[in-house]
Image 1 (spheres, rainbow, N blue to C red):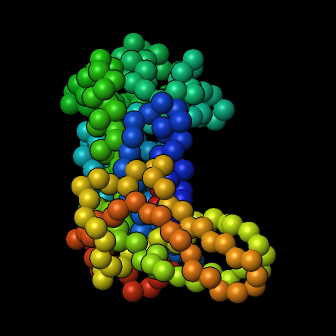
Image 2 (image 1 turned 135 degrees about the horizontal axis):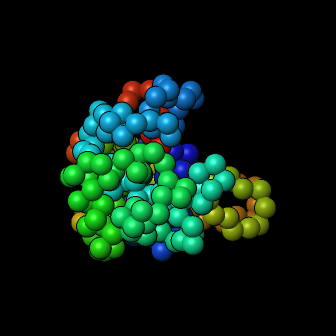
Length: 244
């Protein structure tokens, strides 16, 4: 789905910037209309408002500290968030906060230091990039696994409509394409303890020498069946499942 693609791009970009691996679970549904406003934190929010917004969807204030590490890359009104490190993901964001280098920082970034619990975690991340990467992978993975505002996928979603299929082609060629990935409570797949990681092959190829229907050969990573919110997907296939 488009929602899956957006999240896949986010995780791929994170890895490209030398960030941690983040598991990506496919099966979100696309919507025809946007979600209600107010689901995305505003840059003008106070820290308390930000904490409340994340608390409403199941995140702690420690999670807010962890997700704020995304500010180690990107720009704010054209000003690099972390001058000198803007193209590399890492704990330099926290180091600069501790050192008092607040150039390009948001008000909520600065306020992280005013709460003793949050400041302690900022200090831990500033001292230990490995801990930051481990926590960020876990928390960001949860964040992009939103099904609804207050629900999170508990595992990889079964992939539907990926069995033997027919594809009509009109020229002699070999083509590959990405297929829609949707949740289905009745699908059965080989069990696996590993989540789908961005970079796993999801390929459909088909060949034909004339205008006809031919069988497609498909290669997919193993996906285990799941339980949880995706076991009962929304009845409206036009509904989206993600806002980031």
